[in-house]
Amino acid sequence: MEQYDKEFLEYMKNKYKLTLDKATNGTEQQIITFAVAWNIWKQAKNLYYKTEQEDVAEFMSKDHSRLDYIFQEFRKSKSTGESRQLFMEFEAGIGRHIKWEEKILFPLVRQKLGDDSPMIDELELQHLRIMDDLTRISANLKARDTGIETDLERLLAGHDKMEEEGIYQWIDAYIDDKAKRAVLSRMR
Ligand SMILES: [Fe+2]
Ligand SMILES: [Fe+2]
Image (cartoon, rainbow, N blue to C red):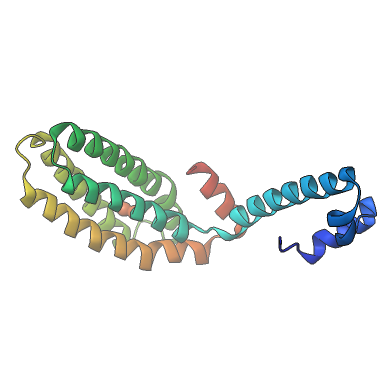
């Protein structure tokens, strides 16, 4: 049995004179009307919750986990074809992620704190190191240099933690909901 919410049941009673009893024991038309309305209601609520509840920290941390997963799959992959495919996916994902940070998120922090933001300077330096490791891995895709791969793995672990516990939290605390929605919509 579906867990209908109270608000929905009230709405159906007022708008269509349909009670829960009619939704299960009424005419076919009544049952269908109720089921269709409930589906639409649930979808609308889901969308509402998504835009209302997700914040920058959650959105960006999920992207870190997704990229981590692809990188781990790449490290495990044995055939050159598969490694190449996974690496390209990872490289494109990281590139997009770093662009979001450097073009959208970091400027927000700089806007507030001015150019004196040592944390952002440090994160941008780490981005350069990440990109440098990517170039080196890309050049060794056939022979595989596990030393660089391990270096990148460590670098990313520290970097992601620094962002998740620092700068993303700071942005969520500092920007209002409207700005947050605008920022998130630019990253989707
Ligand atoms: Fe980053
Ligand atoms: Fe990040």
